[in-house]
Length: 392
Image 1: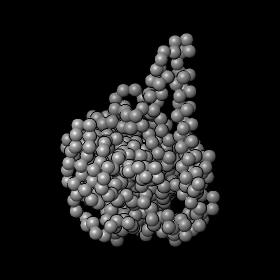
Image 2: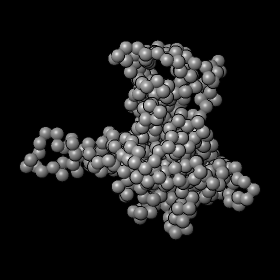
Image 3: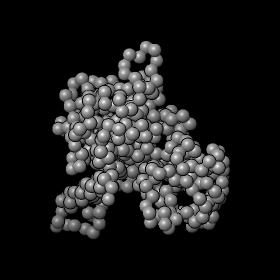
Image 4: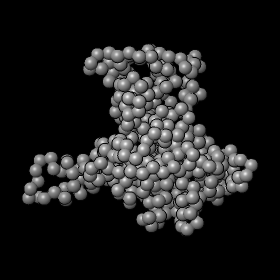
């Protein structure tokens, strides 16, 4: 078994332990003298619900392109989570039901709300709506917390290096705030790559913590500075990282940012001799341009369209879909919503039968061998190359 698989398995075991502890806690809440059928399940569901109704209580403009939405529950408590995990936000935009995963940027200790921090992406369907139109009182649904992108003392060291790019700082904000508030015995060094100086999310707060907290350091690296910027510039390559952190021995590295950052940082860490077991990466979502991803067939041009046929219990539905868009997006655009969570090809929640046709899936999609053998795909990271037939 590969070291990454071992790490993921241990993370799953830890997550299972958390669920088991919740169940025992639920049992302890029940009165042994009056334990009605289903009571324990009801209590467990309250602690780890599949969906929670929330409303926007506050809105914070972090940068010209980034907004934080503070979400409070409509009824009952929010589910507990670990710093670094994400939730899926379910919403309707222009009559289309869709969902997007967002890392939680608030710490677990603040149990009355969950913060999600959204950066408006050029042409972004959901991010533009959340940053420009979402306001106080708006109602959404959240999934329970998911993901294993957090500090796990069983397998990680206590000397942590956070490599963030752009809005990839959001899970680190939760980890840093949590460690500071709960006085965790860890050392943290945030190396934060931004394109321009005014896009540094949580900049003042994190700089203040770096000045006041002995266990936290921060370096900001700007890739496209203006003439007046006097801070550090460049990319998160091996020389820059080594100059920032000094050495790699005994450190655990966490990566979160845009897809292009992963190749750069993973290559830099390999060059510096960091073993794979000391590198943790967060899900990065679909690539911005799948046609430049390794393995994409040169014969299929950007903008080309195919026919997608979807077999449902109500019969077959057909629509035209672009080859360079994930099938999940095309399904939602045609009001055929299916369950989904990570939108990065890893969790398998959107797993769907491909009856016929060919699709392209980037190598980052974690398709099980049994799924590949029997014709199942993850539509969130599947791009149709020919006319396809799916069954949902």
